[in-house]
Length: 572
Image 1 (cartoon, helix red, strand yellow):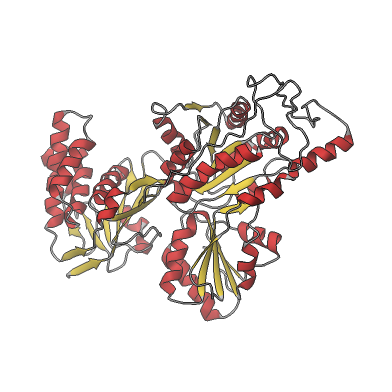
Image 2: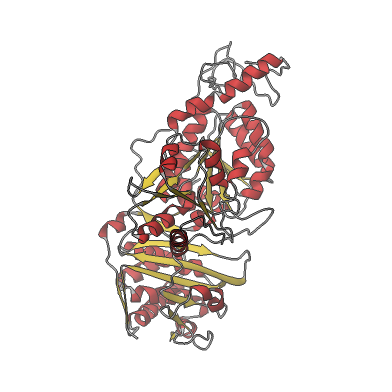
């Protein structure tokens, strides 16, 4: 049956770990973006090195579209487990392209990737053939494909390079020759000049722009991508990247680096962060800057190591014993990932507090094109003073922010003590001074208010229903709400979570129907909203099975709420 796909195409690659799904996606990402297609991909995979059932969803669009869709237009299954693994998402409209002798699916289009690869030089070339097939279907310039492959494998032998060129040409011919499938997606020349980044890369670039010169971590998915990306920049930028023996060492080394004058980044996930909580409390007492990126995954304990969740807000909000200020940020787009990470370093330095950046596996591992980040107005704000002989590290000030010195810069002594201390940093048990020191630290909250970023309203200001989201769910929620076609429904997205933006109260109180969407089981952000504003959500859409929200399921759940006319919330 003939089929024309216009405006928006979802291609899903599915197979086992070790079959090269990411190699195919990497080739397609660069070639499709070079051709002027808007590109977005999101991966889900099991926690294993070989085997299992994994998939990568690629969205190719005529306009920027980065919401996650359940729909599958074209499926390339690389092993027989792919079909049952994705069964709920496969419909009669899904075009399945694969090897009939290996995968049994009615109506599947047979392309013998393995045989074609063997004819080219070996089974290893099957991935390049599969990538070529998609390029042929989308009518990517064939010469551009060949030139790209030569560059992509430039570090390999001449034989491997020529075999890969032959492989992509074979795949291209197979895809171009598929009868009955027409892809009519408009290209945009402006896309060619844009950046193509993963969430990990956006966070790493933001850290570089923030003046980061020291990174330490203990590898833990899904945060490891940021560590690897920072290490890749270490030869071009003056950065020290250190893999530490454990997370307790990580946070303490980062605090030591800030004490010495460096601008340090910690990247971790929930289980690693749990071990850092004593160090976070130390950070509060010695009033040290700290920037910590936490890529969330399902817990508790080891949980689902390679899956996605927004379950660590409460952990970060309350980490560390005692009372001290902090800032929590949660980017929703690649541009926000860059800008908020850059800003985090200046905020940490200005207020001498920990600043947390919350992402998740969906955000970190997704890839898409985005306009080049504006950098002309960005500054690295160090907020360091040259000390005099009478310097007092923790001097009592009107706004609670003491002048920050670093050892060796001036003639003063820069003291740091984990016990309560006097203005010079010496241990004290003067209980009246203890109260003044706690009050001094908490005064920073008032100063921080000047930097708080208000939530972003998307849609009409004349809303009756307000859909609230935070972090990585932004684009998916916006697309779901837009597809409803209801003029009195708007989205309010938070990228600054704490201290809670005062401006949010007016938005929330105006809504006749308040829906909060978040990826955890206990409605953590909805609870924070009620604590800070007194406004309770009418409906919580919660998901915590390890997968990201999709446009279709959010749209469907909101429609159920409208049909019910009362309280209705679903947990996936």
